Structures are given as C-alpha cells and as structure tokens.
Length: 243
Image (cartoon, rainbow, N blue to C red; front, side, top):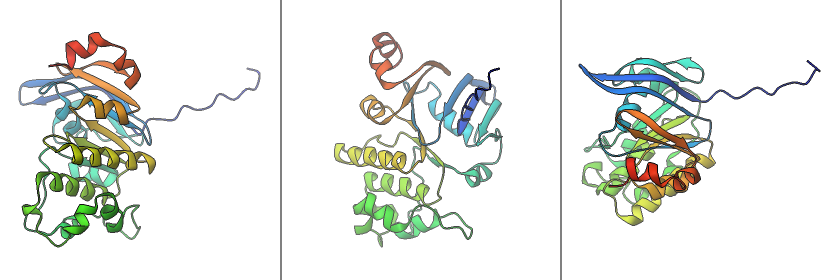
C-alpha cells in the first residue's frame, strides 16, 4: 500500500438481507434485499398483493421472518414492535389507526416519545406543516375527513422523533390537493435528515421525491435503481407496475 486511506463506506441506516416472511404456512417474501441510507427517501413500488406492505410489517416486527434486518448496525429481526419503535423507526400503517375519541392535539401528544431529551418535532411544527390540523386541534379525531386523519397519523408518528419513518400508501383515496400536501410533508422529512421508506401506488409522486426506488413482484425485488433509470425502463414498468 502507498499509504492512501480508503474512505469508509457508510453503513445504511436500514439494511435487509435475504428476508423471507410467512403468514402461517404461506411463504410471502422470497429473499428480499433492500437498504435505506440516512436522509434518503426510498420508494417500494408494485401492484397490490406483491408483498410491499408485508415488507414494512416485517421490519416492524409484525410478521414472522427469517433473514437479516439491521437498523443502525444492530439486528432487529423479529423483535417486539414497541422495541423497534424505541430504536427510532416510525410506522404509518395504511389503516391510519387514530384514536377517534381523543382530540387532534391529544392524538399528537400521545405520539411523543418518553424521556428527558426533547424531540426534533413540536406541536408547532405539525401545525405549520398541516395548518388544517391547527384549525381542528380541539376536535375529536373520529369526525375528521379521511385526508385530515391521514395528516394526523403522519404527524403523530413524527412526534415520536423517528430516524426512519415507513409510510404505507399515504395518498390512497385522497383528493389531489391533499396528495400535494403529503408530498410536501415527505420533502420536509428529507430536508430534516429523516429517512423514509415509502410504499406508494402513485408512480408520479414516488418518482418525484425518491432518491431510489425498488419494484416488487411475487414477493421479490425485480428492479432497483434511480427514478431516472425506472423512467428509462418501459419493460419493467409495463410488466410490474402498469395496470
């Protein structure tokens, strides 16, 4: 060696290797390899039923798996979901899971992580990102519109101060104006250094905000690349994404 120092390659924040997942005897994921870097937005694309939601549920400890899931360099596969959350992973499920009888503000406060250290996000941040939530702060969450409930779920997860947030179909069934707000929210996360693993049907949004995309088919990754590379690959889009 001539004394030249080779720079160390940063370990991904989240790294999945040879992940298999099962619902009873049904083998759903077949050897998934995937990673998300710090401050990176990565989208997981594919048709319904190919295993995208199972992938994020597996990371969150909600599905029995084999293989390796590491977060910040530590193995977390098959840990309890609450322990995974405490490590710094936030999860926004497709069904939103708000507390309907509590107010908007109470829902947000419930999302705060315990401990003496102040989080990166405050109620004021949430109301700035989604002003509609400020207007409805004392209203019971159960009477909010679907779009408002989605805003609330996204913000409640952020109140837990995660380093990585996994979001399953955040724009499903939302009006175009709300979809634009959700896209702005995702960009704000990236600007603050929060990593995002996004499960999304709307190709346009995923390609606009992501640094990398994965395409799934039949429980496997069939494509990995940049949005530009996916745009330039009509064969993959036609076979695995287009209806």
